[in-house]
Amino acid sequence: MSPLLEQLVEALRCLPGVGQKTAQRMAFHLLQRDRQGGRHLADALVAAVDGIGRCQQCRDLSESDICRTCANPQRDRSTLCIVETPVDVLALEQSTGYKGLYFVLMGRLSPLDGIGPSELGLDRLDARLKQGEVSELIIATNPTVEGEATAHYLAGMADDHKVAASRLAHGVPIGGELEYLDRNTLAHAFAGRQTLSGDM
Amino acid sequence: MSPLLEQLVEALRCLPGVGQKTAQRMAFHLLQRDRQGGRHLADALVAAVDGIGRCQQCRDLSESDICRTCANPQRDRSTLCIVETPVDVLALEQSTGYKGLYFVLMGRLSPLDGIGPSELGLDRLDARLKQGEVSELIIATNPTVEGEATAHYLAGMADDHKVAASRLAHGVPIGGELEYLDRNTLAHAFAGRQTLSGDM
Image (cartoon, rainbow over the protein chains, first blue to last red):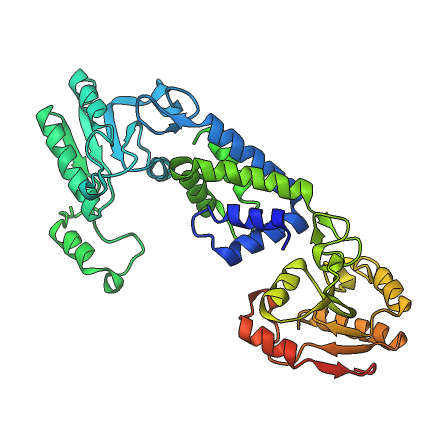
């Protein structure tokens, strides 16, 4: 394998889920069938890495100091949805009609890894809650041990500032089957069952 | 999603096997955790796309006019192994002790797609066989319908020039592709190659 090709294969392995074989396949594909695509990808990578920083307000990935969501006057500034990563913002935007703002932790509390409140920008969140503009906190951290601990911490902060806090509902996924659900989720779904009105 | 991020996701989709969700995951991974890797990948892409052409002799991907294998005085110039793609050369190099030269078709005969002998550089192969340096042809096209047809055509050429021809031994699963074969099977198939008569 030529040195440049080897370098390309090695470089492609920085992508998540891409091992040696997949990287080889990608490199050969680009060189044999899609050189234009490869060049375009290089440009897009440089543009994104150089041009995308963090929003000063919500910590989401953004090209400007204030991201498009935070700058949008149409969004409801009284509701703040707290997520772990930018990809969660995307998922919520694509699947819900949420019209409030976000706050992106860029992680979760994990004392063993040295990730505490300040690493997650919670000092900034605290200052924002103090301003009194936010009246509801929607906590959308992942339902993992660390995500739950983070949610608990956030609920404490909301309480300190007398702000209503809610957590995404846990339960049976739509289209899922009870039979294949893990015990924890099923236990949550059972405990959190909701009253049905007759006119459902 | 910011425009630069959207462009990056779109650009990543040129990679084989990468759809919208995977591309998003890759883009977010690079931006959040591995910007250095992203920049490095961009450089490697440009270097490879600009620097890698085709070997004048064997049609393999190469940085120079004559690739390292063809230029290597240690290789046996009397044996020529014919493969469909550069990745097949790599697979054979990694799993067999083959010391001859290669000829890369960059495809297979496929009249319906307009791929005939001249698209595969078979005129050049013909000229090379005429020179008389090559005394054995190892036909390592994939055991697909088109690969078999190509092998048949190549066996005919070998016969015309009174050159011995062999085909990789059975052991390669029908319908499979060399690229994905485990090394052991590939080594066995290579070692157990069988003589072809012109009337195959």
